Length: 184
Image (cartoon, rainbow, N blue to C red; front, side, top):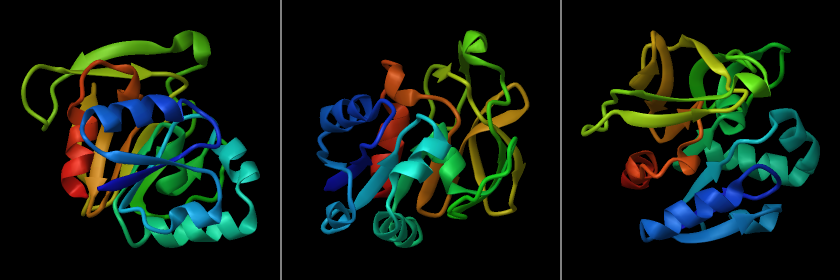
């Protein structure tokens, strides 16, 4: 199983380490050619507008084609990029999952937090690290909610696409990445 991690910015290396701990072969992806031969993709957190600026036209097209064909997991900025609709401010998304998101909806960097909540992944409450996190403000009928923060969905899945508005790569809990690998 070969998993690509988009390695343009954000803590892509934490995703790499977590996936390798779970037995995956990981490729750090930076250009269009890197998409050849991978089975799934992780789009890490960071800044979604920076991702869009750093992706050249050819790599963006490969990314767009990939997220509509194979398993993909986006965290924080990755969730924003995969969404159907983005607000605060409006931004084009890849429309890979039927959700609407509001950028930075839980506050600024100083408002970052770690919370625990039950999830559909079983076991103890899931630790969730929120850093300038987006809020999922709309979900389509085929989107499955796997975890919530209060009443807000924060971990969702639709078909072969899963997104988290938090950073599971910064928690010692491996269940979110393990759930993604089950999808591959």
